[in-house]
Length: 316
Image 1 (tube, one colour):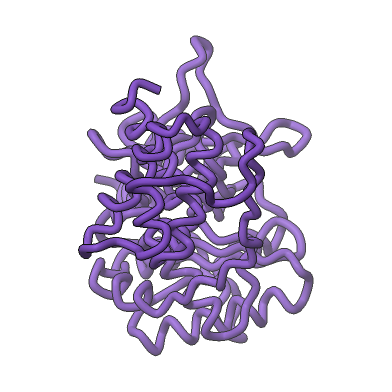
Image 2 (cartoon, rainbow, N blue to C red):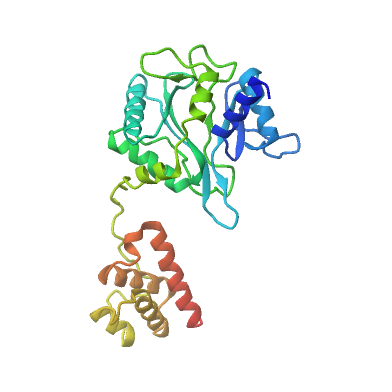
């Protein structure tokens, strides 16, 4: 293989993803689709050809990182990034995160973006879950008090439409002079060949990303406690039987899910409306252990399913 082909292959591996974006003549970032509407892939021969035209031709490309996992709603990624677009302070943030990652033996790369901002890239030996990668970048930024508004991947599951958020690739031949290149300390920017070879030889391992991801501290929820609004005129807990026992005494065993299910079934037997059953079951959960309330949107979804299942069992 020629040197150019080797560099192209390495560059493709570093920036592998789901689909490509291509700058329009007026500079807009848009998904790149063929004449038949098929997305241009960010893997395989078509990707390799496109990258050749990015590095040595007229194309200016970007990539969408999320790669679907067969049989799972989750996605994998092959690289991680953070984008700061806050002027001179952006470089300070990027260098701080780079130095933090270096202390954990993770090599990262600071790149000047098209205008005034900076990107930081972490390249991965193997594809990892998007959620793990996102947590890792959040953790790195948190530890040096850096903004986390533009952490990639921005999504961890594939949106119903589109590919999620993508990012422009560095080293387009037609890039602005001195921009979209890797920077290292006070040295001059790295040429494309040196960057590609060095980045390829220093990709992060899965174990390294697991370690930094474990340091992520999610922000405490600021969601207000929900105040129930009932569709019936019953505004007090005037229910009876099994629901009354659970409401007053809590679960009589350790299976809170089963207790809440029994509570909901009892309310349906007493002809409470589905909306009222959901609200009272939510309040029962808050009162006795918060099995679902503490899990945010996912817990709310699980609670609704529990109530729906109870309604189905009771013929409601």
